[in-house]
Image (tube, rainbow, N blue to C red; front, side, top):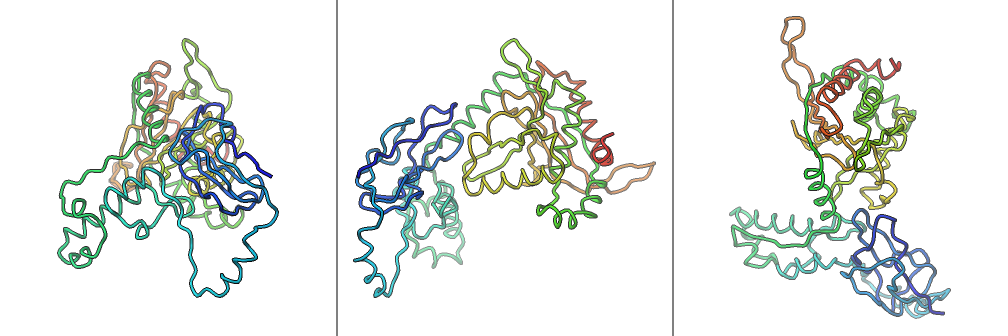
Length: 402
């Protein structure tokens, strides 16, 4: 019995998708639920699962093409048992070697590998199921160039399959197309700068009390809740307290209307191999510290294994981004439209401060609030950061709700 494999229904905000790669080829046996192909949208990677066990008989749309919901991708001959299992099993038992099929390469990776005459088997893939990403190839090229420039590595580099042009040139160039996600990120960031009167204000916060509280209770917290106590939950709680006092910062602009949100859906910026995504903690004001940390941990796990859904990324009334995990001292975060504000966290550094006329060393973080000046006045932005600072320097405000 033949079965048509169709493009699954795409999210409401997504009109089409790119067929990134096929994991099965005509003649391959598949089990029910096996991933047949990957579809890349502006936001997420969607899998095309096999509806039942059977044999792939025909692939209609090759990798690299753009497809829409409901379009025919392939055909599957539904069968309950692998017809080749009886004949292949003895051969497998008698064989002294095994072969593991490598994950297929995306069109952009194949092009990059071909241009530089690279053997992909020598590249470690960081993508899902060990797939080689463009960043993996570029990192490989950079490593080989560095080895070529190091005299001690000359002998090793001479046996590398990298082309002479890529290795010998001191000014290499790589032209690769943007992924759909990177193109969407570029579009949204440009939109934010063009369509908003964006301004940034700064403050600094002494995190001594937060660090002391965290060090005192982090082991008991983890033992009870099975999740680590990080810094982000403190910042989420402090931001919500400040948002309650300044509703405009939790609002958005729709044409000539202002939409004041009576809920607090906080976006947490997460870096993935494909780019920056912002999953949403729904009704974050209803979550305790453990609930916030578990939500952030789940987002990180989904980002690593590529299972973030469009629903995870939709909506949001305010965003927090932490450049400090990369060592950033200070930055001006860009708005996440249609939100009108975003809080930037940065690296915690020991710095000299004056207390009671004495110079002391304290763990200081610089905070940055970027906001849409069409809706938020400078006074509100400054006071907002003041509330965040107050809550973090005296965490009792958060714990006692005062």
